[in-house]
Image (tube, rainbow over all chains, first blue to last red; front, side, top):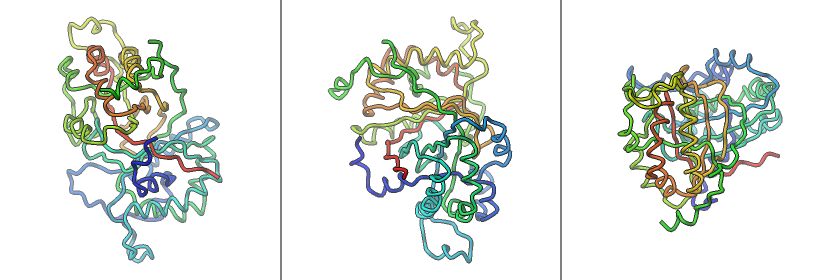
Length: 184
Length: 182
């Protein structure tokens, strides 16, 4: 691997294990209204409660892979009065804090970081879709994921994610076999 | 070009190949006009030429991972008169045909499939982000990817991708270390 060519900061950022926000997290901390005017593209930070409900109808006993795509805010956006508001953190720093708090909990509930990539360029896609980190976390089953997102300690710290994230995607996948070598 | 030779290992993997339609391929087959404007997050099928240009200003000699997210059309859309137009294929069938042709070319050039997932649900994102396939293809360097795009055999069959794909993403990444779990 050409890891040596990455900066340390890049690796550190990438190594942050990172998870999803949950509806509970949304209540916990209201992000300031998006600054964009009417025509700006929509951004997504918290999970869609409808999708969340739909997920619970999917198989509960199969392993799941959560694909996370994250773009950080330039500056972390904490609520006024929050002890973090005055720290002058970047979005990346707030996300690192979220990660520091949430990854031990994820580890405890069975979540495992499976893949990390540092996005460099979107070749196909909307121009406003720009990602800072992309990663996949595996969970042995739905209960493992739900145990994370409903964990009181997790919920307590989830506001760091809202403070950090400008736009995100979270896609539940079923693991699939990597195809066998092509014949030719 | 010596880098390429070095990586020609026909036995390497990859039957899911997949990449972007190249500008050349776009000429090959005009798809139905994209229904949405540029800001939209829907209907992206071909590589953005600007991004494609920027791609080659990034490091040339590092390993890259291309994240592919694919939403298939219900029914494949071939140009009228194409021998495939009357087959009544689904988008999935057209895309499978694309992969059948592209996969061995990718493998010959030294690329392989690093990860494959079956998307089930978008929890965070636009409601209409409904992916059918998500996978990551490894290339030893960008020259290999360029060689793929320029491969005459690849270009010849790229119209199947366009016929099959309703929306897609293609993101160049550098692999990063996965943190250890205690």
